[in-house]
Image 1 (cartoon, rainbow, N blue to C red):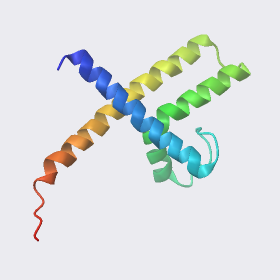
Image 2: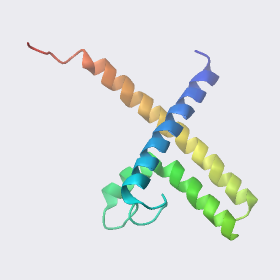
Image 3: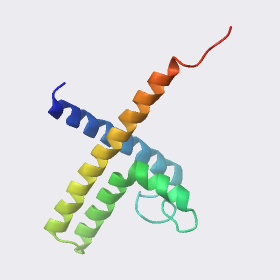
Image 4: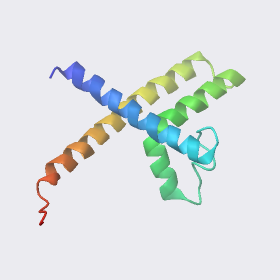
Length: 114
């Protein structure tokens, strides 16, 4: 495959995974996804890290758009957040592809008796 296709595929996988995780979290909690309670908490550090790793680009985008609407950040800061969310989504996609690749390779190593 062409390198550009691989990059686009990783980005698409990351955006899809992030969107699915973020939407599920919003549906379960009934609140907008953000870097705040109930998603991120100093009391539940591991849960916060997992939520941020899976839905972080979605959280960052929500927070940046809310800050822009309120006038707390400018256009350059919004663009910076957008670029960070894109890079984060691509990194998440690479991790998800690696996990899926590892899982499919190991499926043949399990022995089923029956």
